[in-house]
Length: 256
Image (tube, rainbow, N blue to C red; front, side, top):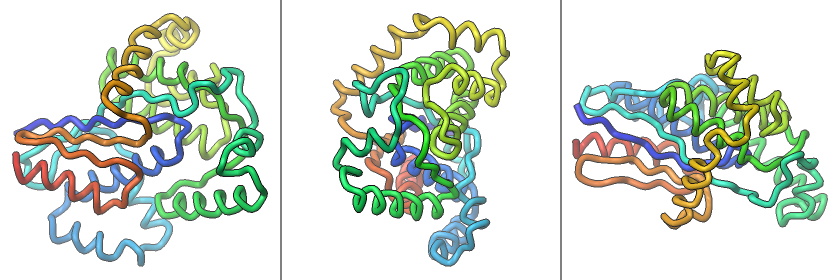
């Protein structure tokens, strides 16, 4: 069996990476099915009711083995700072977006919320546009540290929790309370979580090095999903439709 690593470059405050994660989850769920059944699901996506869409896009823990048993896929998360100059203490999302091209008028802000709400509904995400935006270096530091120490399954649970808490519960993305709650959901012992979350130097050099490495690889926007294959890798940039992730995974399976 071929073991494929999916390198997923993200920022935990980027809504497009959240959408991409949910769509990739749906694709991973589909490649576990009989291909004919998966094709039927893909063809009928637009007719699924909200509960079916939410179930299809529900997060699950890697690794995932395809229906044929040829390939096992495991997601590895790589850090990217969408707003490296954002303050650590946080700033109102609305105020932040008012200073950007997405929300510098009420019309743009309303349009942005409508578009993201629809995308969210299609992926089982209930976007909350309140709360604060903040520098995500602390969140990346904690995520990368525990991914290295405890593996991809724990990292999956951390990512799922961090996304939900920021985008659906309006929690501050790098606040101590948020990071501790995410660690708890990921099954990390409280004392260990306290030590890592509370010591800003733990894993700091490593995460900064990884961020610079992504820049060196030409990553200047997220999401970027690179699926490693036995003969070639397949890259999907941006939050693409579920079918594009299914296509990428199937190509890796075909060439395994």
